[in-house]
Image (cartoon, rainbow, N blue to C red):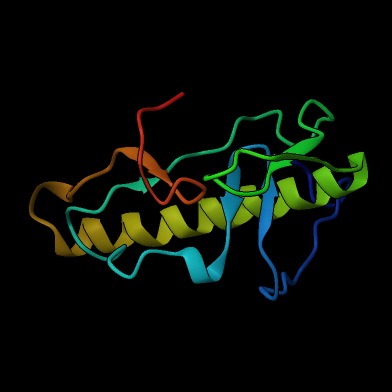
Length: 122
């Protein structure tokens, strides 16, 4: 975990937009309505190097697969949001599953918000 005294992080994320880098995405309107069920899988975790400058594009739409360029600064900002929101979403689902589901429920991290469905881990 980073030292937040050395590497400060934002204290607020405004959910007014979608956040995406490459095929990693988080958007409040794309969150499935059934995430708090025992059967729904967790969200796919983005790679550890998201925001490093290795992903200077995003896939605008899963139908057209059109790649759009993004600046390194935008990649870093969106990567932070995607990573933080994915972790927070998964943590909330895990807490629910541990308390409400016999056997802990589905803990597979295979649901892609970008694709809108479960996928095999890449």
